[in-house]
Image (cartoon, rainbow, N blue to C red; front, side, top):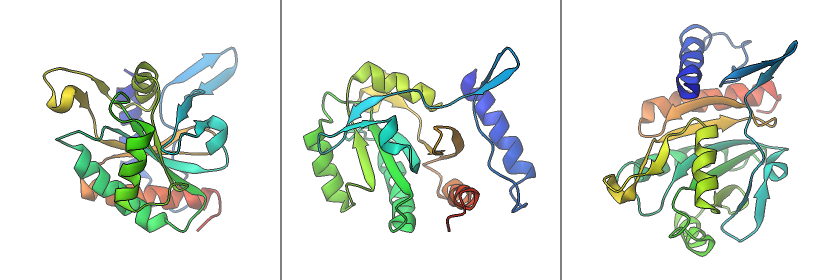
Length: 205
């Protein structure tokens, strides 16, 4: 249900507001009413390990907006397509220190920090810019749900995991502000516009 609500809000925004330069991106996800307060969905506290075996938590990213996805290195299906689009995003914003790229593995048993480091080096990306996270498998799969990403083990799925190819945009408060289908280059084109919208919100060009 949370995923459906997120999609509905985003589709309504995309259909009606994207041509207005003064409109801010919406905050996606469910809302909880506590008394007279509306509590907006945000990424909950987390602790994972990056490709350099450094601890990464919410505080690590509190001064950045970031683009996030979920993948696994041995994925034989959609991950290579998504990673190609993530590289497009990385290339466009490589010199913008305000933006980070955060990729979570959903197969930490095989995708150890050491292997993720080799993966990052093969992509020739800046390790401070593009963070690859590993950790407890259940925690990573639970975290995918917080990003509205379907990800779970499935013996019948290619590589043993069934997952979506969403790429998401998160602001400095941990709110999800936009998403796209990482297997669709045209959708990623629109997502790049979303990133620029959010940068404008922070008055960063």
